[in-house]
Amino acid sequence: MKNVSYKRTLLITSLLTLLPLVVGLLLWQKLPQTIATHFSMNDQANGWFSKPVAVVVPPCVLLLLQLFIFWCAKHSSQKNNSNFRIFNVTLWIIPLTSLVVNFYIYAIALGYHMSGALISSLLVGFVFIWVGNYLPKVKPNSATGFRLSWILNDKNNWQKTHRLAGWLFVIGGFVLLITSFMRIAWIILAVVLVIVLVPTIYSYWLAHKK
Image (cartoon, rainbow, N blue to C red; front, side, top):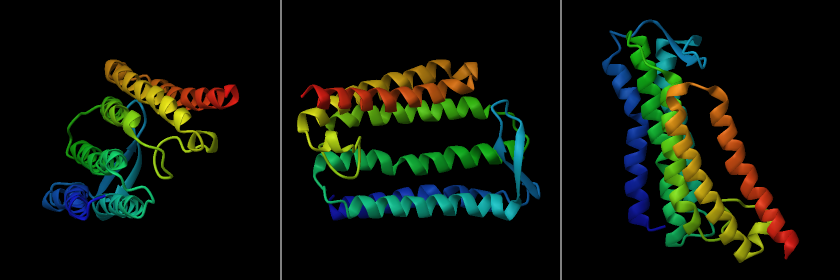
């Protein structure tokens, strides 16, 4: 990972992750003293925090998680350009999540009506499509991808498994986009199980066959 690219991406993604905190402070006088931060699939609030906690804690926790992921990326034993691509995709997921989730919370607190289930399906769908486009390009490494022993020990197994996983991620992403308006909670779980279990079983079959 190039040092310049690392520092630039670190700065931009960190600022974006903390942007909801700045927006929350600007909206401070308009926000209620108690803010709903957790919702059911029917968009019913079932978890609340005080205003200071709701505004400050989520962005800061996500920033710490982002810094940890950066540390893992920088100190990974594999730093070639191919793996930096998938790292770069991963490093933008937390800032995107921070922006979408926190702004949704603010919108609900200010009285706007929005569907959390719809937003979640759209967000996860776009992320899956994004990641799926890069998975087939990732070379064997100890930091990203399907890192099972029988996959890491066989370059051909790695390539075939991640090629299949890439297609499943993209297809699963489009399924979530198409069904996002249906608000069916189990669809996200079903898609996640398929894109995790199918490549794993396929890779094991390849190893056993060999």
